[in-house]
Amino acid sequence: MKFNKLFLLLGLLVIAGMVLTACGGGTTANEEPVAEEPMEEPTEEPMEEPTEEPMEEPTEEPEPTEEPAPMLGSAEYPIQVLFVPSVDVDFMIESGDLISQALTDATGYTFEVSVPTSYAATLEEMCASPEDTIGFIPALGYVLANQLCGVQPGLAAERFGWNVYWTGFYVARDSEFQTLADLAGATWAYPDAGSTSGFLYPSSIFADMGMEVGETIEAGGHPQSVLAVYNGQADVATAYFSPPLLPEGRWALGDAPDVPDDRVADCAVNEEGRLFCGEGFRVLDARSAVTEDAPDIIQEVRILDISKEIPNDTMSFSPDFPEDLKQEIIDAVAAFVDEDNPDCAASLCNERFYNWTAVGPIADENFDGVRILVAQQGITLENLGE
Image 1 (cartoon, rainbow, N blue to C red):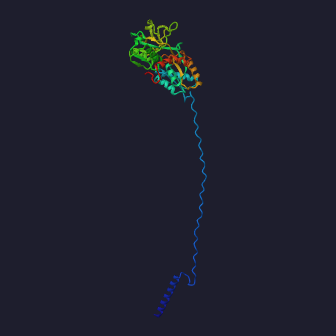
Image 2: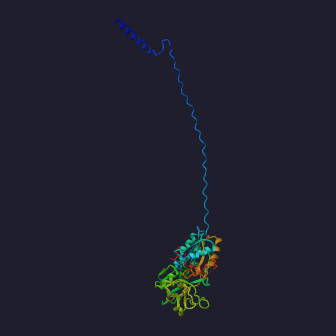
Image 3: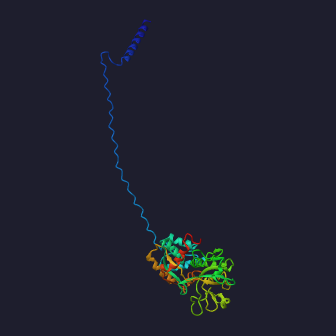
């Protein structure tokens, strides 16, 4: 029993010593505590300034080079050719290609033909396109366009040797009108207010006589004016007059303008579409342009009187048309206008077109007489027809 107590005591002492050793941290009482070395502050490495890479100068892209403007007369920039709508407009449009192709063949240039809706529209278009336009316009049209924007004459028409024409006053053959004075109060059909023979000259004649007509009808063309009398819509029509071709000799100023009474019954259209009154007497006035609609036009409509001479219609150039092209085109038109040329006979030389047979020179001063009438009546493009 005593022996067991001794072993228990020794065990407790061993355990107590182990506890004390653990609490002493493994140091003896005489050991100096080791001083802790100060911790070095971490040194921040200097940050490198970011180096900017040199910016490349932007390289300018080359400006696009402009394509050169197309040349006048090329397919991209054709020369404009305008015809006033004075006669059979449908026929003019259909045959216009013959004219443009002939001019192209002669000059190598490209042309574009059109028929504006009125005389005024033709003149306005010439002035609106000053560098590239040719106009086939009458004397009044030329004077107004020259006044408006400086249009210049190129050449003038000739018809069977005449470089002038006249106003014809057309009435029903069975009417009672014997002189122009008898037309007071009559219904008057005229082609267009821009027509020289159809409007300017008769207006001047009526004004000089101190006479007033009655109702007026703007018919839209010379053939339409004559048809207005034929159809009973008007008492008198004014339209162009060109002298007839005679079996012998030549018509002269002072000769009767109408078909002789003894030939009227024989007037008819031949196989070529030309209006003859018996052997060798060929009618060339405005009645010859309506035979498809009115084959008996001579039997139904006569010429009461004619005016004084009027300068023939022109081929004129817009104000800034290139000088170096003008003469080439004038020469080409002069070569084209020949009644024996089948293309001209089917277009510009035809009675349903302008009935040109040749061309001749013309100058601005040739229109001074027309200018006087325009000034007397106060006509401008703005008040045309008022």
